[in-house]
Length: 398
Image 1 (cartoon, one colour):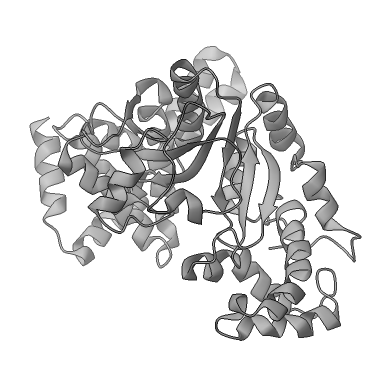
Image 2 (cartoon, rainbow, N blue to C red):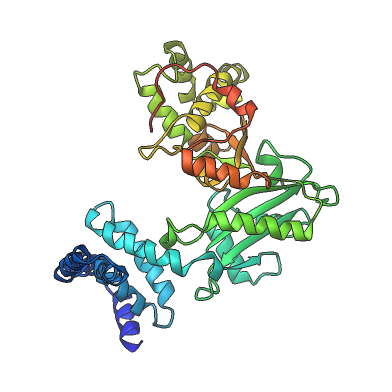
């Protein structure tokens, strides 16, 4: 433990260049022992049984993983290793050889941050100020502008906020979700964040998940948010059994980028030449404020976002949009797309103003998850499917 603590302290004291040298050393010199691995392979081929299979498994494990386990024994070791992985993620684009180190971190963190070890806590206005400051800082979807803004999201009776914590990072939220209690599924974010709004929950039948923020960059790729949503649903039902509908109001963060690439493409599978010409209006500042322009663009963009959500795929065959992948993989249904759901500068620059409702139908979550996981099917409401209209050519790729 003393050696582990000393090594981690030395690492944090290194310059960025020295840290990179250390990480590259882990990549180059702390992989599997190849001579041992070859012997284990030969033994398994000669006599494939549980004993030789276990020996092969142990020999194939990179020595980095055992090093990380030993470093984790130091006081505060888990948090320091999460910060070390942040360094790996930052350096990875310029140093692809670090991918092996990154894979090892994800493998270990997936076990260490297993949902069975996580603690769900409600965040409210009585939560200690230092933790509330972190909520303000970590909010990644709809920026919290002030303490007054935070209070509007936490204190009223129509609001809830829950976060996952890990015992070794007791004062650091891992992921948190903000919830609004309403009488119907909202189509825009403005009323939910407005300064003046009714705070009645007696008639609330709908829980709206309008912001999910991951707080620890070093845990990227470790599933946390999907378990959070499901546990929050259970918690809300215990407190408010009258709730009938669980739905999100989600951004579409990569739609504008995809839209721009499709506009520049010569393919006609999304836009005709006439539509591509009409879309030049998107380049005009303040276009949503011009009613005639907005009316002309709405049907074209609505067909495009249906293509983006229902048809477009990344190289792995999954939907392009990361928020869609998260909720569909979680068993939700793509329920509704909302024109001008977020007309803020960020909403326009990332999602062309659109927001999406994903419905968590508790009786169909498992079925929807299986369809998405096993067949890649995007489960969507009939209303969303109708937006797709007639297809034009082959399915668009990312």
